[in-house]
Image (cartoon, rainbow, N blue to C red; front, side, top):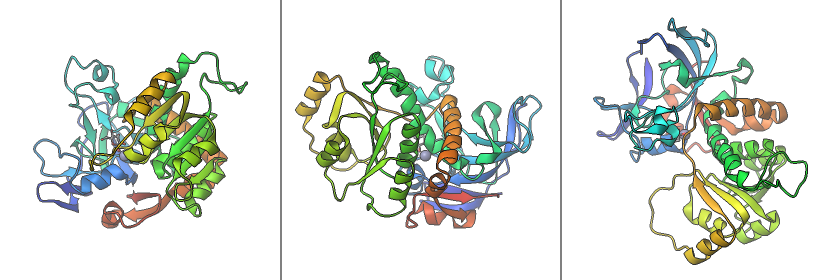
Length: 370
Ligand code: BGC
Ligand code: ZN
């Protein structure tokens, strides 16, 4: 069967013939891939900056943002049937008995770093025709979400970030000054970036009750702005407004959801955080030259205003469940905006076009079956 593979040693990426996987344990299912998303991580892997093949293989089949259909189940698979749609999780636990996170199924918090990730680190991924996986790593998706469910995995980043935010902000137990809001924290959220992670995050924070502003370098006209307006959020174009002007327009910033991976911008925005605010880092910047930052000001403000910054990576099954639920809510509330995030669909033969990056658009996906 066909698969998109990267050969780091030969510095090559191509569509290869890859052996069809077989069910090897009674709790596994075989899944026919329908859609696989292309993200920044994939682009880094095909640029040979990231990613590792499985032990003993000279190539890695890439792809970790999946949607597939179950075609076969082992005898002990309990909740999946042929025809069910599923989105697979990405990370698999490390082998060390002392890693309490992995031992509890929370490899997204792995202590040792020896986890594996499908399509990224030492395990083949999903940009291929058929995949075999344990039932516990497959998340069932309603059939009505077939056309957008490939967005579930990139949405899990916001879902895990939000779940932690709600835990952390339990430290503010009096609720927000805006009465009637359900949770403990206040509600002005700035999303940095209007790529797929930023736009999906803007939707998730809106559904969670935040007043969302998206600050992005995107021109203020065009699809991204339309999507932001459709969800009732505010779009501020970075070309026309400095960070300081943006901060004035927003008022007190309670949460920042960073989705660009630009550290200079992130640390500039840190300086405008409100009292008791949280800043969520999700981007993975490439290593460039050092950037000057006013560390005294940042540290002073962080202490005097009880602020915190946290990074978040990967996601547990709960975040997949939350993402599946939210994608359903998004498609009810803003069907065109959600579909508008997927701007390019490519057959596997043309996978290198979005992967090597001159196609533009928001989210490009590979279509393997309809
Ligand atoms: C994936 C995560 C993964 C991370 C680091 C992201 O693109 O969505 O599942 O943990 O890359 O490899
Ligand atoms: Zn990704």
